Length: 102
Image (cartoon, rainbow, N blue to C red; front, top):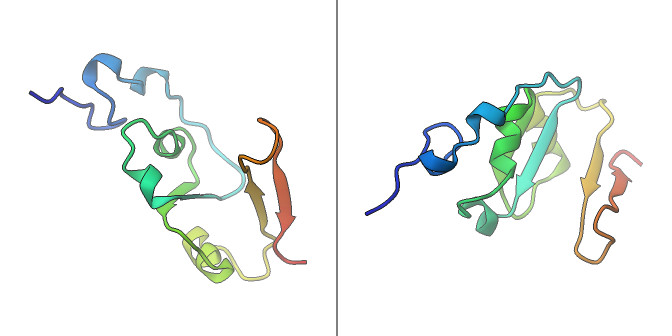
């Protein structure tokens, strides 16, 4: 028998996180591009980010162009974009920042 899941956070009801998620307004639009294999994982944290911040958009894709990012975030093409990317080859908390407009 499958456990009942929370309709909001998708965790088992006995482990619901909704009472711990506090919505935070964000000044910048955020797009999380999640690997399709990760999207089906039952404990993915990317989805939780969409519950906790007002301007987070989550998509599941292997490759997203800069124009698709602009369209998804509903921002003008002259807006500066930055890519934050963490890779297994880097230290645990090291993040690469790439200027997409350079």
